[in-house]
Length: 325
Image (cartoon, one colour):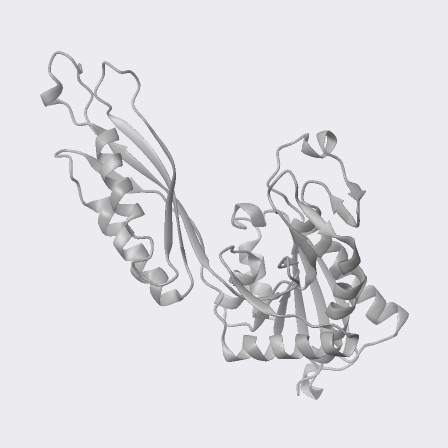
C-alpha cells in the first residue's frame, strides 16, 4: 500500500481542509494477462488490463496534485493524502483498517474510480457482502440405502432458491448465488456442499434487512439433518447520497462548468474503497477519474480525450475543497 502526503499552507485552525484521495493499484486479472494483452491505443482509446480500473485513476491523482501544487504553487489547504491500495478488488482486507483510520483524519474523500461511460460522477454505491456457506449432510450408498443419507446438495438447492428470492424484496437489493459445489460421486449421497454468495443493497437499512434474512435462511433446514454455517464475509457498507455528497457533486459540477463541459451523477452497483470512507461518516464523492468502460473484461477501455479534462476537473475540485466555505 502506498500513502503519499502533501502538506498545505493553511492550517485546520484557519479553515484549511484535509483531503483524502483514493485509488487502487490491483486489477482482477490473472498473472500473465498484461503480457498476453499489453497496453495499446487505437482510435482514441487505450486498452489493457486495468487501464480504466484503476490505472487511470492512479495517474489522474498524481497528475492533478502535481499540476495544482508544483506548477501553480497552490497551497490553500491543510493537507492532501493520496492512498493507492493493493487489494480493493478483493474487498480491501489488508488496506481497509488503514483507510478507516485515515478517514478519521480527513475532512473530505475523493474517489478516483473511473467516471461512468457518459462521464457522470458517482454519488452513491451499493454495499456488498460476499460470503461462503458450508453445508454438511450424511454420506451413504445412493443405491442401497439412500433414505438413510442427508443430501447436502439438495439442501444447498433449497437455500439457493430462497436466497435468489431475495432479489427485489427490498428496493435496490440483489442476491446472487454465484458458485455451488458439492458431493463426490453419483453413487454417494452428498455429505457436503459449498455455496459462494453475494448480497448488494443501496441503503444501510435494506442491507441490514437482507442480511438478517440471509442468516435465517442459513440457519433453517429443509432437508432433515442437514446443517449449514456462514463463514466470515468481507463487507462494504453502502455509500449513500447524503446532503454532504450532494454538495460535493454540485461543487464538482461547478468546476466542470468553469472548464467548459458538463458532468452528471449516477449511482452504481459496484462497491469500493469510497464505501469504506463513507461508512465512517466522511463526506465522499467518487468517479473523478477519466472516462472508461468494460471494466474487468477483455475489451476494457479508456477514453484518451477524457484524461486531460478529468485531471483538470480533479485539480479544480481540490482547489475548491481546500478551504471550508
